[in-house]
Length: 197
Image (cartoon, rainbow, N blue to C red):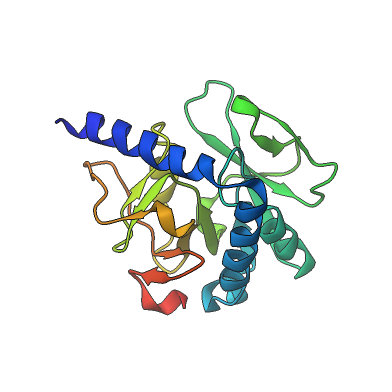
């Protein structure tokens, strides 16, 4: 089977399992994972944090995004650009009034200051469908985060928060796929880069 087909089947399988979890159970898992994320040295040291607003059955990011703001860190969120060819990044100071439904119903910044220099970001919360313990990542297929992550500073941390069912033995990796530095689940943590702990 070619890599694209393997990825498609893995996406379908993992999203199906994720969707089968109850809303309440997902919320409880997300809360545990958020607690672990907040304890990471890389997060505690970070001044500028790129997060994302979850949709569907993803790990719930609201509590994490609120913590970023409550701790005086700068919160940056992505917005799909007009050509749908990439993500633009914006500073967000108000989660209740600063967001609107964007592409695919994902909450995006309503406006605000655009961040042009990706190297300013200290900590990156990375979405995805499946992850390996070695930091391999299977996204949703658009390549948006792979294109962002190739430009990250070597000392910034790219971390995924996921349910343990999203961690698989092997993720199909192609030339343009970018690894994350760590994967945090409710039952385990896996680090490529130990300095983020």
